[in-house]
Length: 396
View 1 (tube, one colour):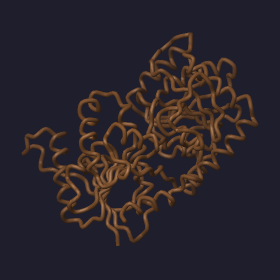
View 2 (cartoon, rainbow, N blue to C red):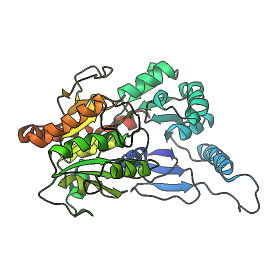
View 3 (cartoon, rainbow, N blue to C red):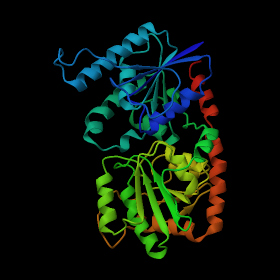
View 4 (spheres, helix red, strand yellow):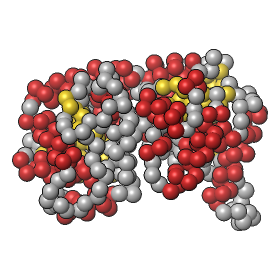
């Protein structure tokens, strides 16, 4: 019997969290699972299989150590103790800070396996520039295995973070296709109008997702097709910016913000196309999940992930400039600049191309039908059973 310890900050509201949920639920019955969360009172938006272990500390009134530091050290020593006493075959960590803790507590008692979900070199915040990236460069190569969520992420880890090729594995996110189809049949929270054409975007509302570019492009779509609507499901620090752009462009009746939706697949079932304008990703869960729901998709050619999904036979290092690509499994447009404009009559060229791609799907029924079929076909390659076999293979 195998024993696995998973390490992640939380189990609510994120792609890595959903990926871990899918993996644990699909593990064979003879695999025992513990999940260590980096919080004292964990919220759990996603189902899971296994035993939750949360970090608990002594009474806050009796210890004068600041709360964030107390939790950080609490995680470290809790993890070290679990490795010593848990008789685990491996500790598998998700995301950068848990990955660093996993390496620092060592592989004396079990294998250390890291899962990196994003292109670390593309994240520009001070926290990553001065803390996470230097630590990753120093430590990641010491793990027994480092799992990249895409080939592009693997290249980044090898070239910029000193992870040897013989320690790298690429394992795409896996999905329970049957469960997604079942959930898509539920009644959505939003009441859809059959006379409207709905574009959908789901995911965290932050700087990397660039939904402000989507809203600006959508403004041009509405000028030609007033029946179109845009639904943006998610929450995050850029929500106020998006609301301001909608208000300044007089799109209040055209753009819908449902917030965090626990069952986004029910929304997907009633929409006509999915649009994903990200600046950078690891492997976008939302893109693949909407392909499972048979939606035709448009994605910007961010590093990395979109090209690997939509044009798997092409060079994944190629990046599109100045054109629209009708790829094998979806439509690809160039990445936008990232500039945040509230109102500007002149769209960026990349925003114009994104708008044109959206108009293609509105106006060409056969193209829309074709890419719906292609989405379903491609999504079958991401069935969770295949990915679980790869994960278990790392233990050998």
